[in-house]
Amino acid sequence: MAVYKEPKTNTWRVIYRYTDWKGERKQKCKRGFETKRDAQEWEHTFQQQNNANLDMTFEAFIELYERNIKTRLKENTWITKEHIIKTKILPYFGKLKISEITTKEVIAWQNEMLAFRDERHQPYSQTYLKTVHNQLSAIFNHAVRHYDLRFNPAAKAGSMGDKEGGNINFWTKDEYKLFADEMMDKPISFYAFEMLYWCGIREGELLALTAADFDFEKETVRINKSYQRLHGKDVITTPKTKKSNRTIKMPHFLCEEMQDYLGMLYGFKKKDRIFTITKSYLYHEMYRGAKAAGVKRIRIHDLRHSHISLLIDMGFSAVAIADRVGHESIEITYRYAHLFPSKQTEMADKLDMERGE
View 1: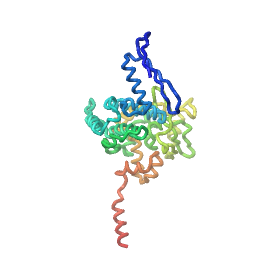
View 2 (view 1 turned 180 degrees about the vertical axis):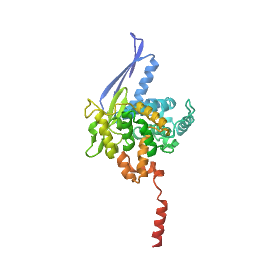
View 3 (view 1 turned 60 degrees about the vertical axis):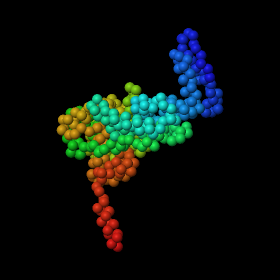
View 4 (view 1 turned 45 degrees about the vertical axis):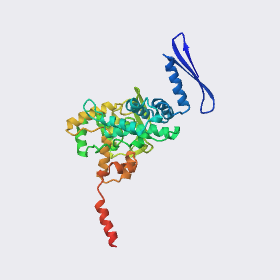
């Protein structure tokens, strides 16, 4: 370990020699520190990280956490995590030693998150609070599993927020039809929303669709990819989960509509995206259509809830619905339980009959 001043630039540099996980000797050099103290602090932090010393700051541990998990995640997943860490977690815990963070600090942080109000005096949503807390807990879990942190203070403090975030918002079939009528003046909008509502696909799945994904003889559409806009570039990734890889049977009328739409497209290849629009475009079109139709405003993702709700109303089982929309059946059962017809009376009557025998 050595700290040197560089006369030409009047800055400081660090040369640190260490043994990596393969047992090989390595050298790390870092330049550009304005003061000797800054250079020494960086050297100390790097040594703690290399030795997995949990006396390091939470901020320093986050650098380890990123190196460990970033390459294992989809780019868009890491971007979401990174934003939460930088804006909601590091400002509070960054300078604390990770080994000294207790439930007391976590509860104080939770109270700040719960007390937050934006410029419209709105709090964070229950689902967002749950997501933020889960991220903090995931960081501590990583430290427990891989760096011998004694316990997870976020888990011990208890969670906040609610995964379900209250009642599910959706349109009935009649509400959707009123909305769809208002979309007919823009074919690309109309056909995009038809796919979202009648197939229950995700927004990213819609925007990744190509002509090659449709089999009009079998009346199916293949879902095997998702679209994201990252760092100003179009990125096609695998779907959200393994279960999301699926083939959906389309209603006959939708097959005819999509054949009409594809017939309007000129000069495109079978593997070109057929909906070259943005998520922002869909958002604004949904707002326009809802206002014109006189129906309540819902999110784009709520069209997926609307499709599932329609299928439940039609009497399909949770297992059948889950296969169609790329969910686990237990998730459908739990999240949409209040929409399924109650079987309690039927259960009680059959138990009476069993007791009678």
